[in-house]
Image 1 (tube, rainbow, N blue to C red):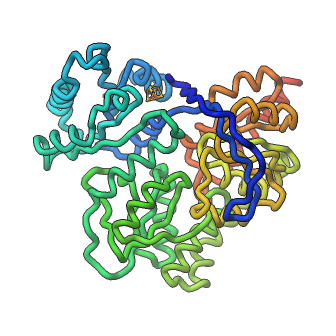
Image 2: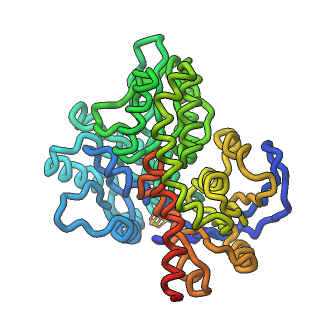
Image 3: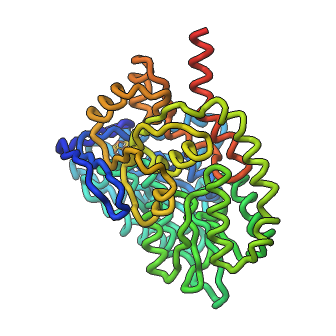
Length: 433
Ligand code: SF4
C-alpha cells in the first residue's frame, strides 16, 4: 500500500474471450499498479468550491495527497487527512470520538465549508470505522449549515477514478426531487468550469434550456433528479453513480464520450436527439465549433498519424481516448487496456474502434510490460509508477493521470488533447537531436 497501491492477485488466465460486445477481450487478473481513489480529491476539491475532503487515513494517505496535489503553503487547502495513529489502529483509542473532535475543530475554524466529505481509506476500512454512521451523527449536529457525507477512496481493488464515482454516488441521495414532468438534462461527471460553460452555451444554442451539472460548483446548487431526468455521462468511469441515478428514476442517454471533434459532436447529438432538437438547429449550433476543433487537430494529425500507442489499464478513459486517437489522428492502437470495461456505458465507443484492436481488461502488470516491450510502441500511456522504468528502457510515455487534471473534453480542447500526445514524441525527437 501507499501512493502506489500494489494489490496482489492471482496470475490470471489470459485467453481472449468474447464479451457481450462480441469483441475479444483479454482478461487480466494479476498484480496491479495504480493510484487509489483518494487521488480524485485533487480535481474534485477544485470543482465543488465550498466542499472539504477529510481523509480518515494513515500517514501514507497524507503523503499521497501531498505529493499528488502539491503542498499548498499559501492557500487554505480544502482537503486534509485525519491521521489515524497506532493507538487508533490497535483499538486503544475511540476513533469516533477523535474524529468528532477533528471535525468540530475544522468546522469552527472554516465557516466557508458547506459540504464535508469524510473519505474512507484502507486503514479506516481495516479497523471497520463506520464513516456512514459518523457522517449521520455529525450531520445532526451541523445541519443545515454543513452537509456531511462519506465515501470510500480506499485503494483495495479500485482504480483512481473510482474515487470520483464513489463521491458522486454519495451525492445522489442528497439531490432534491425534481418538480416537473418536463424533461431536464443532467450532465454527470466533473468537468473543468471552462468546459462546462462551453457545453452549457452549446445546449442553450440547441434550445435545451433546462441543463444541470453533477457535481455542482456549490453545495447549495444540487441539481434535482427524478423520472423526467435524462442524464448524459461526461466521464466513462461512473458506473455506480449511474446505478443510483437510475434508482432515483433518471434514464441514461447512450453516447460516446466528448473527446475530440467527432466524439463531442456525437455526444451532443445524442442529447439533441433525446430532446427532439431539429437537425438543422443542431448543425447551426455546433458547426462552427466543430470546424474549429477539426482545424486544431490538423497539425497534430500530420505528427501522430501512423504512430503506435499502447494503453496500460489505469484511468478508465483508455477506450474513448483510443477511439479519438485512432479515428481523428490516425494513430495505430497496439493494445488498449482498461482496468474495468463497462460494456453498456462503452457500447457506442467500442462500436467505433477498429475491428482488430487488442482490448484487455484488468491488470497483470508484468505480462503487460512484456507485451509493451515486445511491441515497442511509439508511445505508452500508463500510471506514474510505470513511466520512469519504461522511459529508462527507451519507451516514450504519457502519464494517464494528466488526462484527468487537464481540461480535454469538448471542441475547444480537442487540439490541447492531441497536443498532450504529440508533446512527449516531440520532446524525444529534440533530445535525440
Ligand atoms: Fe495507500 Fe490505501 Fe491510503 Fe490509498 S487509501 S494511500 S492505497 S493506504
